Image 1: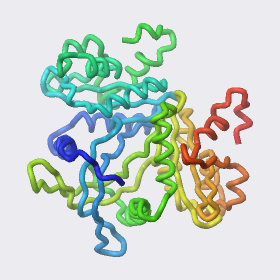
Image 2: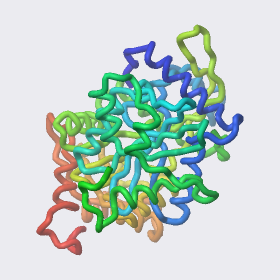
Image 3: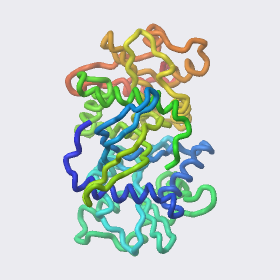
Image 4: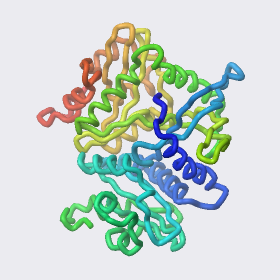
Length: 201
Length: 201
């Protein structure tokens, strides 16, 4: 493993991860909702989609007993890709999920690496999107990655407004099982055979 | 995060990971060869394939300074999927890579979870295989996952012999860049348009 060169960036990331790790104690988070939905999809043999593990730079491992190894020094690394990927109806699916408390989506939520990764997925004919949860509104949207990439690369603003997002996004149905039926939107947006590809918004 | 229920199994896994982490000091390993090949494929815009981070159960994080978080207690978890996945020519690709010093491939190298995962990938029309390196022979093979699954589930032996593997496997060309051109084999085995699907061995 290579030492991550940019400590400051790692730090920024850590806050997010810590928040996620503590999420179980604060009630349901977007990550938990997606995790439950993915488990549902897996158990019903609908799709094979997983969250990737958080990348960790391991520095020191102790072996206090013969049968157990304990990592005693490690650091969070910035992910070079998105958090989720997998397979649905023979298609490669790749996405990132973000929560926002306000009615804007700051591009700072997405790293340059992730933007490049999403563009590559599009280039290689995969399905790439962002799931954005507006937690204060209890609304969760699927946004095709190209809109976020375009905003990130070409917008003069450092964020997208709620209205801008809603104008290109698809509201994800919420329910009991699955909690967030985002594959229903994937069907509609990416896989509907009768739909003209140009109509995909 | 949920505590991993089976400590003993975690322990078994740890040895493998530690070996991998130290590989950089022992010369090139299969993991490094694949990593370099994936970087090459990515840089040439050929494919988007990554190794998933090792799953870690984080127990305790310290914040010695405001700008850095240090993980001070964590444990390896057993991966529920394979190590590698990604996108190639619009196809979902998923594989595990294993080294063996002897002329057998012990099924103990693959977990039940990984077998189930590979079967799911096949069921959902993804491309699933195992890369097996016979290090003493300096030969690296791509084996379609169905052969390993079949052996794992139905064989009376606890391993596959070198001869058994070679009879169903494809030798991966080794070179400078990419080190292991396994996508050449993927082309030949899974994507050759003229090839009858029944001929895939």
